[in-house]
Length: 296
Image 1 (tube, helix red, strand yellow):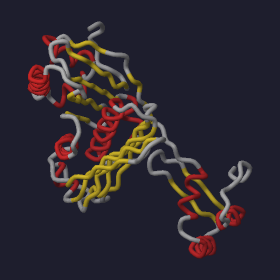
Image 2 (cartoon, rainbow, N blue to C red):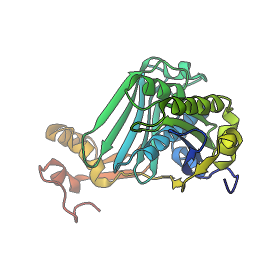
Image 3 (spheres, rainbow, N blue to C red):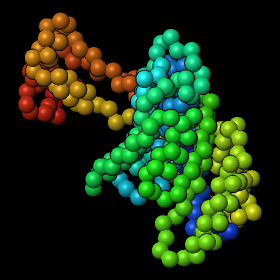
């Protein structure tokens, strides 16, 4: 280990010489944590949940060798009816939520009620995969661990914490191996998990990165790899927003423009507003996608 500092907006992977067959992944969001929710005027408890969802997405995406996008979603009948976080294979993060404006609940179970929790991997090449579990754990981290347990994947456990300003997380995962010393590898994984279970939420938020990993696992001789930067960004565009209008169908689009001179589409992820007026109506009703000179 070299610089024993907390990380800033990166995900970092480690292998421990004394715990072969498993890896440790840490993530800490600072400026990115704030940028993810800054424009959405979320209540603090909702902002923290969105940041934890974003942590989970970044930790998982860093472990996958693919080009594409990962989406984590919680949909429920509670006052926070929707939580979504997306991470691309180049580290771009975005998140959003839907909540009751009269929200007063504070605990996770009160906030989300009953529903489902879904993890979707959408590679640029290959088949889309989605796993769904019931939304009945007591935290975002608990939902992720329930998903790992029920989906036939490598043994994985995750710890997440956020306070609306910063966020930090850890992931412990068994590596895919052929052959090897299985009893030794299992013991190493158990040791890593036992040590990780001692971590406090405040430690994750403030110290995640080399500082926390050394504190928890130094006796297992962790070796760190190059950090993977993550950042807030959005893939929305006027053309993509137009597709949401076109999806209504020709008759509904016509009625929409009869009732108002201008139609506005807001991106919930980044706050960007796209406007369409009567001059846009022709191509909105057309079967052909807009040309490069159509959208201004």
